[in-house]
Amino acid sequence: MTPDAQQPADFPRALTSYPSHPGEGLAVELAARAQAEPFNLAVTGIFLLAILHTFAAARFVRLAHHLQHRREARATAAGRPAVPSVVAEILHLFGEVEVVFGLWALVLLAAIAVHAGRDTATRYLGETVDYTEATFVVVIMALASTRPIVGFAEAALSRVAAAAGDTPAAWWLGILIIGPPMGSFITEPAAMTICALLLARRFYDLEPSPRLKYATLGVLFVNISIGGTLTHFAAPPVLMVARSWGWDLPFMLGTFGWRALAAIVVSTTACFLLFRREFRELAARPPCPDIEVPEVPGAPLLPVPGWVVLVHMVFIGWTVLNAHHPAVFVGGFLFFLGFARATSHYQSQVELRTPLLVGFFLAGLVIHGGLQGWWIAPVIRSLDEAPLFVGATLLTAVNDNALITYLATVVPNLGDALKLAVVQGAVVGGGLTVIANAPNPAGQALLGRFFGGAISPLGLLAGAALPTLIAAVMFRLL
Image (cartoon, rainbow, N blue to C red; front, side, top):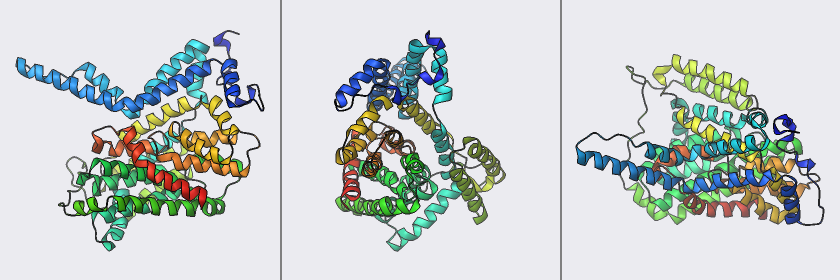
């Protein structure tokens, strides 16, 4: 059969079609799968290069700035206007974390086209890959970051902060403890958007130390990842398994929910105690001005009436209820844009650039992730309960946790204890890297400017280490 004659079902190869090697060990099985389909090594190699690229993104940004500054200095010395450097702009593009997986997806598609034909590459990109989650994140981010929603959330949290003295510490604790569990009801991407916007406004603008910046980011990412587990319909890694394994609301509350809440409170409090001296110093600084909100040209913004906030909530509810039906929630978003235009005196400009970049990031991730099952599934199947929990946590750091749990559903005869272990590991490890959990790119996009434009992967890993460890203890030992 010629490559172009290959049928769509042949790529990617079905996991059930690989030869079985019971009792011969994981290494033997992976070697046999690589031998049966050598192209597996190529797609995984490209995926690993994309991951390494995310670690090097900050270097590309620094190099781009260096080249541009050097070009400007030469232009000034020669008495001519500075022209942007094309090379610097390209390097800056390579330094945008949100576009990394999309760039390497081009390499992947070229490799698929060479290996199996252009039609196969096109079918995989257009028919096999599911972009529902990426599209959903774009819409829910845009809705959750609007002026009425952020203002409502801020007003609600301000009551908590006021009761605790209205200090930076009070805002910090309130946002990181109360905000993440909201993800169990309004979805994790929406909770991440609201928490990140409020942290930018009430904490990061005070210019805390780099250590506290990364510690805060780590706590935020971990709390969001576990905070969505109070229900069975909000967190992507839970959604992937809830229907297949029969997990409902009482099960989630009794098995995951209370442990998640305990972990959120303990880890946030522990981080606060570690930095309590710096929080006292932040409280002595003058209050920062409010975030500048772009107004509608020629018209000042008016106070947001309650009915506008209610309509925004209805649109968010519509999006959440129809999260699995892109045509429905995208259609609803188009109606929302019309409503935002009609109520422009109460609205800030609907910000689409950041949500679109995050959606592009997630789309690139699922394009790569859809081809990694050949090695992830055997790893999951080969581990006992405790090693599976640790393995799922570590695998989540280099892949989206929803993909990890989805692959667990295709492993035959997975026991109840192992099901718990893989999902627990997937949500506990969701804060270790930007790619570990679908909402993390949203947080990175909204808060990246406080980290010099690029968040250090090692800095995030260090910041997330303590809350991840506390979450692991709460989920496994309580």
